[in-house]
Structures are given as structure tokens and as C-alpha cells.
Length: 416
Ligand SMILES: O=C(O)CCC(=O)C(=O)O
Image (cartoon, rainbow, N blue to C red):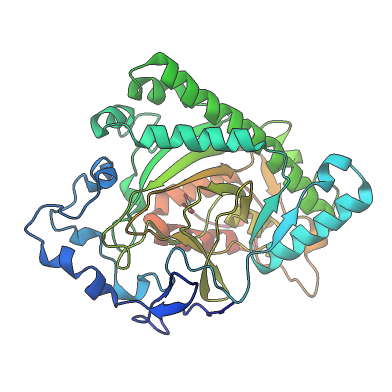
């Protein structure tokens, strides 16, 4: 099987590889060549766009020639969405031992997770306990939602400065990076209070459709609450800490958690744009499932790699808060979403964080001569969130806000 090492954009910006029909690699035309027709047809409003894209509110406010979606050249995807021929693959951990409760099995899984979170910041898990039907139903309902006419979906846009700001249907402008992202979205607060039903009831004309959609979100995310707690316990175990180290602040609740659905319609500018720019997640732990179309890319030691969609597999990644909590033992790693010209893609993302006011205290055992203190020893998610939103300027805002976590002094001594 041919193996190609993905090139970092700064190394080879114009060289693109695509998997050919027989899995051989051929050099794809350069981005301007591939997208030339669209660029030349600038006066021809949105020709070349598929109906799925026209149905999305990503075009709201965009100028007719789509140039707002063209990102700076150094950020053009160097690896296409379906190039999975990487020298290494994101490690997979089998969680079936979780059901057995056998301490030896649990220890084995815990060690694997710790190793993977330390090296990659990401892991794929199988036999995770979330039934296939629950994931499939969620995917199906999400697709049904994004397939609705735009004017219908826009009934679920939260008015700015309402308590739902940033939630409901649509992408808030804060997520603009160096270019406009090719993405459509629905998100809601999942806990402490589930705020899904209000926007959903406005969107669907049939009450039964609203019920089905809301029920599937509740079922899916309820399962992920359980999985998130199991992963946190395994992480503590694997780091040699009391098993409840990372779950204690949750105090039996599901914490402060967001449920998001991303929709990336086919994009005629796919080699010049991104669905989501490179970013790390600010929260504690993220659990993602993607449909059968690839698009998630993880930056492994400076090289972008595509994560191949696999049935029944969930992807878990460490957020900035967990990186800080573990004094950097776990890595919060940059990732992004690339788009493609022919197929729409859905990803469903669950963002877990401890309850806003619970104290996150770095375990002393994680500060050693080999691992000197690099992050704050104590903070609350609320404090970090306030800082994040104050400084938030899209993906770059998250990057600079991350510095706030890197103050290895007690919070009381830091002026914000
Ligand atoms: O769609 C994806 O695969 C990535 C989603 C993501 O990173 C996000 O929603 O923050």
C-alpha cells in the first residue's frame, strides 16, 4: 500500500496529493486551477454551488463572488479530506474491558489511554458502550435537520444578547478565522440545563419531528455523559491518581456541557478554504462522531493527518483545561475540518467541562522534577470561560487565551 507523508502547509503549499481510483497517488491540479471556474465566474452569483450549500446560512452576508471563503494560502489544506494514507494512524483503544470491571483489564485500558493522550491528544475508541442505533439515529436526525429549508432552520437562530446567544442554529461570527469557515451548525447547552427544545420547536413545523430530533440528542448525549465520566476515571487511574480525581468536581452532575452538530455542505472552493480552522478545544474533554465522509484532520507533530471515518468509532480529544489540569501530561492538540467538492459531511460533538464554579486543582503528584509546574495550580472553568469570551477572536482567540492557563502561580496573584 503506498504511504504518503502529509506535508505541512509551510513546507509545500502548492503540492497536493489525492488518492486515485486504485489508491495510487497522483498530483492534483493546484488549487487555483481546480477552483478557477468558480473564481472566473465571479459575477455569476453562486453558480457551481450545490443545493445543500444554498440551503445553509453560511452564505448569509457573504459577497456574491464567495471570496470571503478563500483563506490565506498558507492555511490551504495540504491533505485532502479522503487521503488516509498516512505513515501512522490515530491509535484505537478497545474499551470492551470497561464492562467487565476487571481491575487488570481496566489498568491496561487506562495505560493505553494515558499513552495516547500524552502522544496524540486524540484517540479513537471502539466498544465504548454507546449503541450503534443511538449514533445512527442521531446522524439521521441531524441530516434531516440540515436538510430543512433555510427559512425554517433560521427560526432557530438565537437572538443576540439573549440568554441563548451563540446557541441554536447558525455559526457565530466569533468563529471566523483568517477566512470565513465553510460550515453550518446547530448547538445547544446540554448541561447543567438542557436548552435544546425551545429552538428546535421553532424550527420544525411538525411537533413529532421536533420530538424525534430532541429525543435523539438527549439519548445520544446522555450516553456520552456516562462515557465521559468513565474516560475521566480511566485517565486518573492511568496517571496513578485516585480514581475520582477528575470526576470529583462534577459532583455527580454532567457538568457544563455543550452539544453541537456541524454540517459541511459540498464546497466548490474546497482546496482554498476550511470548514473549521486549526484550533484547540478550550474545554476539558471532547467526544466526536463523524459520518462516513472524512474531514477531521489532526496535527501530529506539525503534520496534518486525516482521521478516517470508521463505523461505531468515537473520537475523543483532550481540551486545554485537561492539559492544564494534568500539568501538560495530556496534550490539547490542534485540529481542523476540511471540506470537499461533492459530499456533505456531518460531525456531532460533545464538549464536556466541570461545573462552572468547581475548583480544578492540579494533583501534586503531577508536579515532579521531570514535569515541573507549567500551568495554574487551581482555577475554575468559569474563570477560564470569562477570560475566553473576553478575549475571544475566533480560533486565534482560543490560542491566545490558552496562555492564561499557563500561569504557574495561584490565581489570586494574577490580575486578569
Ligand atoms: O467536524 C469536525 O470534525 C471537527 C469539529 C470541531 O473541531 C469543532 O466543532 O470544534
